Amino acid sequence: MEEESESESDPLGGPSAGGGPPLDDRILTVVRLARKDADGLRRVTPAHLSSELGLSVEDATRELCGLLAAVGSGAGFVFERVEMPTVGGDAPDGTNESAGNESEGKAAPPAATAMVFTFPDDFERLARRSRRSSDWKRRLSSSAAALVRALKVFTAFGLVISLAVLIVAAICVLVAALVAMARGGGNGHHRNGL
Image 1 (spheres, one colour):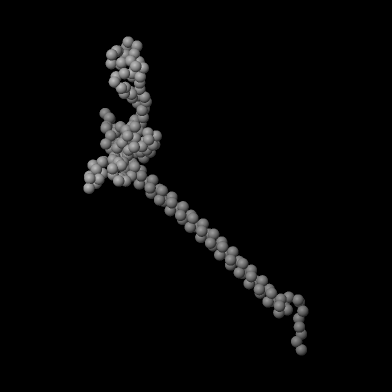
Image 2: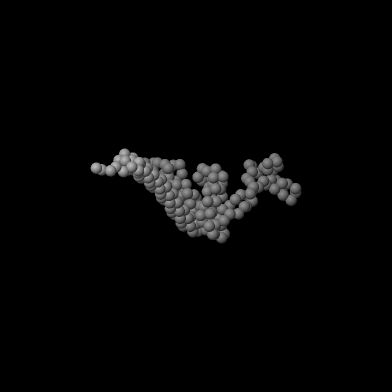
């Protein structure tokens, strides 16, 4: 009973959901819950998606790129400089950043470049439409492949039947020729009946 309440309270359908929704639905949920920027676009980083769903950063980046392609116009990404947090205000070189001013020759805090994906408000509708379209194309492609295989089998079976008919016809011609020769039609002599 407690497990059910945990899975219902977990909007992402994480490990407590007992299988939960598919990965793409969980990704859409993370993006839907993401904060918006000044332009009203939802901002998601691969690191955020990775921490929410337990994916590697590379897999999270791949999934966000797939969502970006599915959403199309209005979605995008930018590279932003992100300052790295330091422990206790100390810079990696052992100096205390809060004690001095950057203008005194102290190094700036360490920073990294992060990829930030942005999605419009209607991203979910566009992503689901893209999924339906790709599912339909995949089904059509597999149906066409099955039809081609069936046609190949039918053609091969037809060729085998045709070959069998030709062999039977050749055997019939040979038997007819043997019967004609056995009756004497093949030596050119005619018997005169007296």
